[in-house]
Image: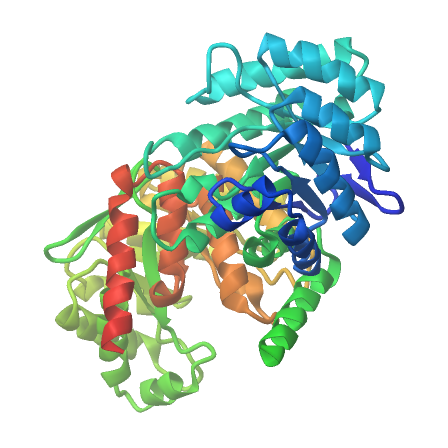
Amino acid sequence: METKVSSLKKEVIIGDTQPTVIIGERINPAGKKKLAEALKAGDLEIVRSEALAQVQAGADILDVNVGTFGVDEVALLPRAVQAVMDTVDVPLCIDSNNPAALEAAIKIYKGKPLVNSVTGEERSLKRVLPLVKEYKAAVVGLVQDDEGIPKDAQRRVSIAHKIVERAEAAGIPREDVVIDCLAFAVGADTNSGLAVLEAIQRIKAELGVNMTLGASNISFGLPDRELLNNAFAAMVIAAGITCLITDAAKVRPAIIAADLVLGRDKHARRYIEAYRQRQRQQIVE
Amino acid sequence: METKVSSLKKEVIIGDTQPTVIIGERINPAGKKKLAEALKAGDLEIVRSEALAQVQAGADILDVNVGTFGVDEVALLPRAVQAVMDTVDVPLCIDSNNPAALEAAIKIYKGKPLVNSVTGEERSLKRVLPLVKEYKAAVVGLVQDDEGIPKDAQRRVSIAHKIVERAEAAGIPREDVVIDCLAFAVGADTNSGLAVLEAIQRIKAELGVNMTLGASNISFGLPDRELLNNAFAAMVIAAGITCLITDAAKVRPAIIAADLVLGRDKHARRYIEAYRQRQRQQIVE
């Protein structure tokens, strides 16, 4: 199954015969004090520089999230999306839990965006799915619902079914729904990695949809986060994840290695090219 | 299913509720000119120092292979096994494609060894299985047969079935058979990683046996081998591999990260301890 998103001139295809798509996570003020302060002041300079840096580091799509205390997202999200569109030509993942902000940003977006996100909560389904339908967008479906965030695989799978069914009922084709299985810190809950892996495998088998995941939460609170994030990325890609929300500069080499193992990199061309690129950067630095 | 092997005083359990077992690969002259020369001269000093270094680096079991042109394995393998037993107290994986050398080494081994290996070839099954039975050893079953080395998943699975059936018919319990699915360079054959992953998943589902793999072949001929080996290790462990033949010093961190994701490391204790150990070593160096 293929999910197609686009910027003005560029299309990115998410699918399990494609290389894993990287959604750059860095335009998001969560845990980034400097970016949060700049956004509160309406300053989009960091947004522009992060956009450029992430695309140079190999991000295929950029997530744009400006949600932080003291920011009017309805006003600022479209401005941030416009700033990123003016800086780089890659499809965007428009990210907010405020539907009015999503709508304002989708309206001015040129191309087919990924809308991040709808959840299994009634309020979210009713408000976000019509938007996605109206603007012919693709949407990330987060597996949480009115009963909260799931710990086990079974609830993740059930909520994924619900989101896909409701999307289809709203006239959104299944290929435009990308399920996010929600990964949590394995240091806090020993079974959280296993639950996510099981959910991914079952959702792939039962629904066949594309899936994404924030690949950095898993290591929260632990040392040597890159080691754990890299191992986790390889494992979830093998399980069925087709795009990852992550830091391209850090996790891309491991993702390309996983794609190579999975037969998605003929003659190891991307792997060798990425290696040469890292070598050149080391010489420059 | 649990495979138990032992040295004089130490038992190691291979099983999917256990941390992944690391079989140290470095006592093997393939591609190691200095070790090959020493073995030809009957000098076991490198064997002893490699034994010590690998156990310090976290190897749970040590593979002992002295096969190289110009070496009489029947004479030298028992001597090497004795030298390793005199140096470290971990179970050994006695490795030769010469059954007479295997027998000579098993005879003097104290404990329950892992015999590496039997294959699906008639000659091998007939000669090696009775040895394994007689000495109550465990055995690695390589998925190759009289028709050669398999490229696809299906033949690997068929040969695994054959080896397990023949072992059971010879009176060896299934838990004492550890299947090696054989990984080959993904740079030479784009599908080789995928074929191995599929074989692992099917053999786990159909036979339930423990499985091992040489985790370094996959990257042969490619740059940045550690990156690829680490990603591959995480993926095969998630697929069902319960012990890896590898370089403990290089791949152990990624293996421990994979175990953590799979819920085999409560409160991340091993992960954090391994991190601290690496920190201490960096201070010493």
